[in-house]
Length: 376
Image 1 (cartoon, rainbow, N blue to C red):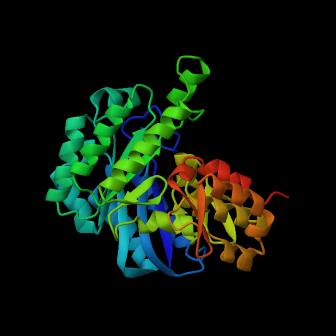
Image 2: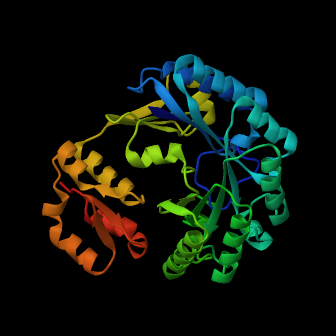
């Protein structure tokens, strides 16, 4: 089975940290939604599997779409693909878009998982990030989602923000847990070049993220979430039993997926492709029934290194037997000495042929992964 990701490239306002493709001009929204429908049809042969078991509306701000637009895109998918009866359909939503009427409309078209981009409950931090909502609106959004009947809710948070103390971070986590959501995602702030924060950093008006503070707040996150009964099934993702994000988990397992919309990426285990990051060009191209994308054929090195990078981020870990069988890459032989050092420092463990990072190891996940890469 495969997943479909739909990138909705519109936002009411630009957050200072965001480098995803979006526009605050929604004049093209109707035309772009229909172009996305056309792309779904044109891409029908990209996935080797005709079966789809996850659909994910990301962005941007997918909650800016109305019920008819969501219904149209889902109808096209159902017409082109064999959609599983238990399909997981996720929609990312901003708290300021979440009226009871809007939420009921989402549920009526088939959305069964809601990912709410709260980021913080602290009004000062929200203003600093240039979010539209307040802490009060964030709290109300979760209450309304429950009232509308959603029983699979994820809350997004951000840490390592300048001005966010560790005590304030604990309060944010505690407030999120108080709603007993099925899932919580928490990401360390990264300052990207082509963002407001990136420009401020380049001008010396903003300090880079303190790595020691980021590590401290990740440790706090892991401790509090573990004590609250959540499983850290991926470094940034925590879930109640049986509520892991099936869509995101498919990325980390290397399953194929189709990306629809401007800037969306696709992967079918042989190639990777990405669409143009321009709404007007995207719509114009699809009017001519041309998919505006660039494609790359993945090398053996790409496959090996991506598998190591993604699986080491998960709670299950990296299957060294699969690496050896599928790619001929004997990780234990090539990096045995380094792995022994990691074990000695309690950064990694070996369980039934799986290399698994410990909580301390997760603080160094990117470094450890890159040290294990195949480099030609």
